[in-house]
Image (cartoon, rainbow, N blue to C red; front, side, top):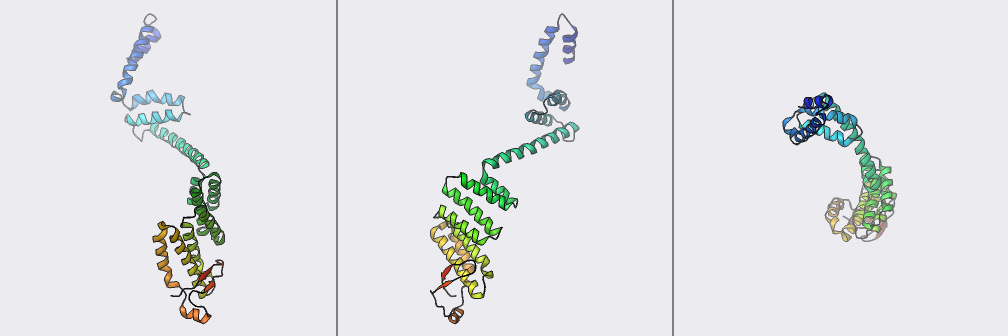
Length: 267
């Protein structure tokens, strides 16, 4: 029918216009039912020229590819393989653009991406950008805590991490998580803080932070108690305190980088 109409449109001077109208009506009717009656080859012949004329239009590519697959074109078909390759290239480029746009508008999200990729300084920079653009103090505290955690756990910048954790706590005074982090710092570095006595005083400093954290924030109480149960066995020995002339409840300086003053408790 298409061949007949096209021939007469081109060669039948008297009825050319009528054939033109008839062909348009025929194509309109077929458009309603073509997906039920025509196969892959029909749609390749119909749609590939459209794609070739609109290669820069991703929506055309998507529609052509999805239609051909829906109409039975196999994944091994060379045409489908080529369209799939073109779509993957577009999707990869577009996803990268969207991700870059998202990260530019959401520095906290960009910080998490950088952290997961091991780019810790970049993560810190993005968190600081997020803080500068944020007005909610609770969110600022969360970002500040993220910086403190990186400085402590990934960069071993203990004094700096503690200062950052205190800054987070100041932004959200009822939040115990920053003090939990400081307690973790003290616990982790206790063994490098001099002799056995000083190490045990460092553990006391950690215990004080855990106790304070749960006193202001019930949400961390369970975690704090777990930490405390692990550390009670590392309290100073009473005999060692006796030899040093230190009694229960007396104040003692931890020294090391910690520099805290604690009230001595014995096992």
